[in-house]
Length: 190
Image (cartoon, rainbow, N blue to C red; front, top):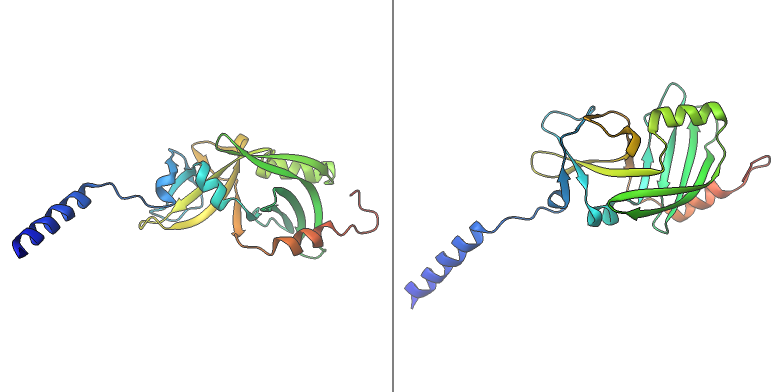
């Protein structure tokens, strides 16, 4: 009887060893030929599939801080999108507001209000793209662990991705942030 049990265990372990291993979210992301310009050595960039987008998209994404400021894109779980303009010596202000949805493996943002002046808008688009249709990318370490979550405007995709919004916070206090950004200061266009 012991020999039969051992034989069954040995057979079952051999079958399990041949089964492919699914690493979530790594296996749910598509391998790409692009590289992320600011990634450390041995970091792999992969484009998120539909399920991964649903699980990872909500959060706060920041552009790199330039000389005196930058932008933060908030994608809230209730499908609202808000863009804040921040600087080192002035208060953060709401720069744009809209809605987001996923469609065919992309994140589509429909902007309803835009309050950046022309110079700031040009700088934002030059740096981050139009941010109307975006792709979600994840970087993975050697052990298939998530390192960074990136949002890349479709017009900024290429062999080397340099311009990306980097997710700084996944589980944000989204209701309070949305309320704080929505408080309309005097003279606001919102």
